[in-house]
Length: 212
Picture (cartoon, rainbow, N blue to C red):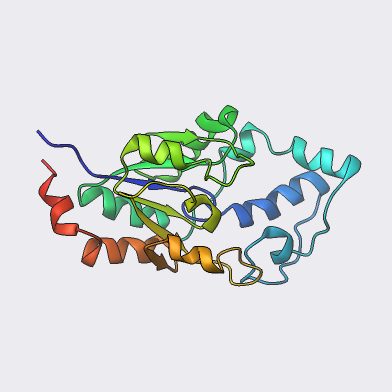
């Protein structure tokens, strides 16, 4: 018996549309849906006509980032179908997210309700060091590939895992500079990654040969 090769997937920006959810959260907190300024912006503050918050308004906004919010974020377009294609091809999918651990179950419920073939979520929280807060989890899982949309989260991951960057949101993107040399492939979306992985991904024949 052999195990299914594993792909670790980020949530916000790869599986789930956090930027759209941010606008709905703004509406919940302040009573109106913000105008879209730049659909190609990486950060919600650049995409929507909203101001940076502080004081009481920031407290109101954060109070709305509760269990309900983290369990109801909409899926990125075509992401559910991409995951089913990967799963049906013999890959085990695990979500590795920098979300606070207290919302890990909410995130799993969100993914399951959206129709993703994902049964496990690892919420690592964030860290202040140079090494990705996800690195330890990726290595422990023995992931064949790791997909994320935030370049700093590839830092410090040991060799042996294919690092795939989803390059979404060109305006003020953090996915620039010399650190791009860390990643092994770049894709416009998870769906594009799935197309590439199933067609000519790294060591594809070798990976498939280990599937029972």
